[in-house]
Length: 289
Ligand code: PAF
Image 1 (tube, rainbow, N blue to C red):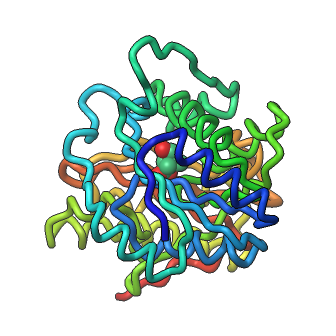
Image 2 (image 1 turned 180 degrees about the vertical axis):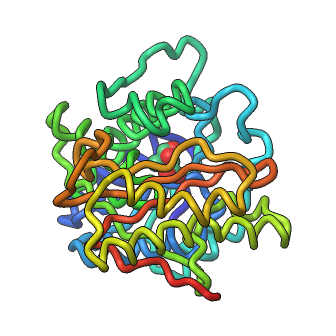
């Protein structure tokens, strides 16, 4: 496995792989890798990538004021070991100054899809994401890129951006990977104390409850939101949103639904967590009672 830190060297390594006839698969990450990220690496291989690239970059552009940029876990050595074990071919781990040198002033902004949910609660976040992902797409030239569906809105936005800008990459969204008790894997789970981790299970329990209601035939958007909200508000400190939205447009569902994505964002202690479940499509989060 090769490790590069400079964008020029990274581009050259990806160019060489493509010239050698390899199909390049990209997994962009912010590091602190867990089994969810490694599942994305496997998914890239399943999608036919025989040159798998992982980028590790805690992107300052996508963190707002007062967010966790400074305390975001940085575990490069362990990340590299995990990548090596998983058969990754190339890791790109740039310094912020290499991605955003002095004078940098260009940003990529997707429209309506970025305005609600996370966009409402984290102003500027998606612009930071789409800017860095565009740079990574242009440096890598991947045939396929894999994103985790825990950041469901991010996945849909990147998919939209690639389509709108004619970026020739297949953007895949990989299902959420969960702990045995239902907690969605996230690098931010490291922030949780034992008590907070227990309370964080409220998110999966709310989604589980909505999944059960859906399986029992409930199709009313408002009822599904209420069902999901119950177990969440019992445990978390603050809810940013619990909503049922259309899985493609992310617009709020109303009345009787044909399909729906339950999305939640909530704070447990100083940690903000997100989770989601596509009703009737995803495997319901397991719940240990
Ligand atoms: O999902 C993430 O970890 C980040 O938002 C991404 C896609 C790597 C861009 O910084």
